[in-house]
Image 1 (cartoon, rainbow, N blue to C red):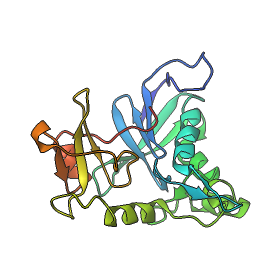
Image 2: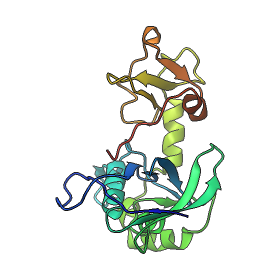
Image 3: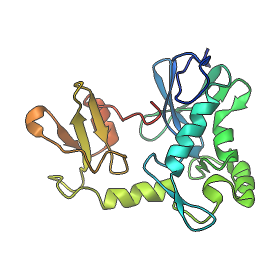
Image 4: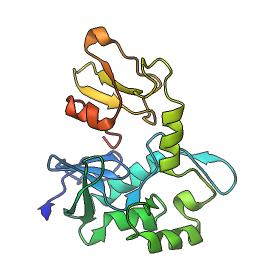
Amino acid sequence: MKCLFVIVLVALLPANVCASNVRVVDGDTLDVNGVRYRLHGIDAPEASQTCADRVGSRWDCGQAAINFIKKLVVTGSVTCDDRGKDAYGRTLAVCSAGKKDINAEMVRSGMAWAFRRYSLDYAPLETIAAGARVGVWQAETETPWDYRSQRWKSSDNSAPDPACPIKGNVSRKQEKIYHVPWSKDYGKTRIDENKGERWFCSEDEAIAAGWRAPSWGY
């Protein structure tokens, strides 16, 4: 088990919160002391995703999930219990802030789904959240796995190969950042192969080539 004290700078949180061995990547991914953890057993809405509310409007559930986990990680020391690798080679973990199970809190609050395809650990909490109609359960809404699938199918038709729509961008700071079709910045990202930018067929391929995913938690 890896343990460290959280010193994170988070926008809009009190000034006595210090800075930064823990970084929120998105609603179900944390960087802890340089190690990236995908939270085991849960799937949060993607950063670009919106959800339906009780009155039929849309709300930014993806960003809300990011904001919620940002508040969780500053409530105590963060520990991440390594649960091995997933099918994509990512390190899975159950992470806690103090005595709070972050994975569980995300599901309990309706800020993430139990990822039943891979684990039933948080299914009971999901049932409670759905019954209370909190968070993503306010109204029928698209799951993140369906959202990703749809965005992949409708991805940028400018890709030379439709099976390889992931955009490997080089930022102004010369950072190599890849954007999947469900990324917030996917639509406005243009690929210029003369600048060393390129297309990828999978996230694994992009990572192996030296690109990283964007961080939406800042």
